[in-house]
Image (cartoon, rainbow, N blue to C red):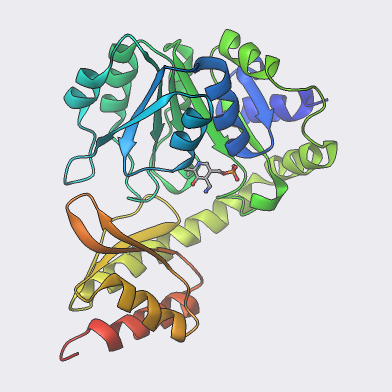
Length: 296
Ligand code: PMP
């Protein structure tokens, strides 16, 4: 059923289709990988802050979730991660680029983690099309690497529920084994195929978004009382001098909905916003300027 789409994805990523498993969104893959590798009493290792679903699926399995804090510059604390591995650690989750910090981790550090942890390592690349590189080709030489990708972000089709894993062939078989056959609708598979046939549409849209994102980050940071962090995704993490609850409310009252994250690592008053169209971003910039800008 999904042969055609796996072939097309294989061509798109330059990996063999036998390494690819297609499911209903990467959320389903996150759930499946936990069911394959985690049992009651096991430990799943990851970083903090990161996408909340990893903890959820680990806990569903009765496993403990351990999140190792990122360094202050949002980079990986490789030594501390390796030190946290025990005999019970069965899975490592890494979101790169990371939600909500929006940075992409260094390829060499990801690679050394995969090599030194020697347990299955999931790299969730949900936002990778907005970033600089992908680790997906590393599956050819690193047997314990499992990469998750999705049509939800760069293709803007979260409602399609289409995601895929790329790994070694045995892990691919193990993932499909815990799933019922005919799980993904053939309509979604066909739409996925069409999207890949017209990949230029996504590439152009992503190219435009990246330009707008970089401009937006600069303009956010130019506001006195706002610090925005570089982004390799389609969202931006920023910090306000005012209480983030207050910023959230002020934005909401002007029809701009962002996410109030509060504290992130050593930083207080953090918020996350999706990169929108220039008019929408402009509205957010104006509202923040009013609230936090000079003299306010
Ligand atoms: N991974 C990350 C890091 C995400 O942010 C999301 C969406 N919030 C997902 C996976 C899930 O995406 P989907 O199931 O739509 O593919």
